[in-house]
Image (cartoon, rainbow over all chains, first blue to last red; front, side, top):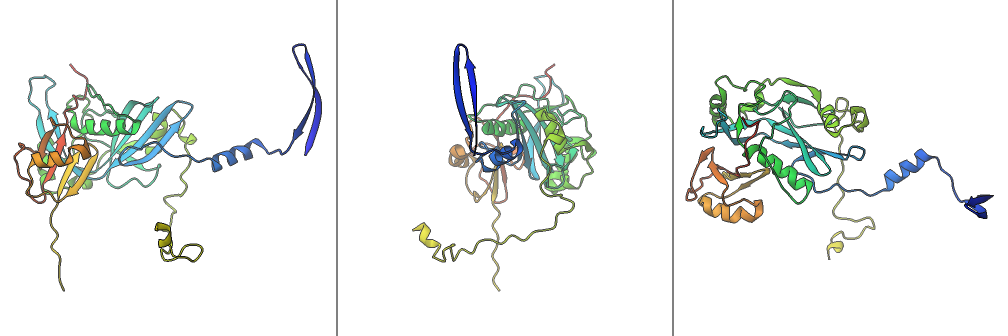
Length: 258
Length: 79
C-alpha cells in the first residue's frame, strides 16, 4: 500500500491531502479485466441472424442474416408504369445473405448476396445476387418500401419480409439471371427442382463478408475481431455433453427440477 | 421390419417466418385464422399455393407450400 501527501489548491481553498493507493495495474490489464468480467447480451436478434456487430464510434449496428435455400414467390413488373400488370414467379433460391446496417436503431441500408453453402465464418466469400433492384455492390434500392417494429430486430425482420413482399422491376438489374430464358425459365426449373439454384456458377463478389460488414458499419475490416478459429485449419472437435444422470455433487439431476 | 410412411407436411411462409405443419385438408381461411396471431399475418395478405394465387376456400394438400405476402411497396427508383 502506497501513500502520498500533497497540497490541493481549489480557488482560495488549500487542502492538505493524504492519498492512499490500494492497488495499481496497467491500463491494458484493467481493460482486459473489464471486458472479460462484464456480462453482456445481444438485443432481440433478427430471425436467421449469423453475426451482429455494434460500433459505438459510428453508432451503427450491422446484422448478417442467412436464409436457407427455398422457393419464394416474387412479383416482377417489366415496365415501371403503374398500369402494367406484374407477373408472379416462384423461384428456387440458393442461400441468401442479407446484410443490414442501422444507424441509431433505424434501418440505413440493405445489401443482399447469394451463396451456395452456409456461412462458415466472417471471412466467407460472397456471390452476386441475380435478383434485380440490386447494385453492383449488392445494395438493394428499396424505393417505396417502409417498415416498422418495436425493436430493431423486429424492424430488420420486417425489412426482409418486405424485401420479398415488395415488387421487383427492371431498375438496377445488374447480374444475368441464372437460367437463359429469364424469370420464366428460372421458375420452370424451380418447379422441377427446388434446389436448382444451388448448382449455378454465380459471379463472385469482390469483397468478403468481413469487408462488407466493416464497410457498412463504417469501420476498417482490421477493426473487426479475427476469427477465433481458422476455417482452413480447423479440425472437427468432439464436444462431450454433460451426463444427465449425475450433477457435480453426485446427486440426482432430476432433484433440481423438483 | 416395419416402415413408417412419412406424411408430407405443408410449408407455411410469411416474411422471415417458416413452419412445416400438418395442414392438409384445411382451408386457406382456416390456416390464416390459426396462424394470424402466431405470424402476425394481416388479413389483406395475398396467398399463393405453390406459387399460384388461390382464394380463401382453397383446401391445402399434403406437400403444398403456402406463402402469405403483405404488399410492401415497389423497389427501385420511381420514374
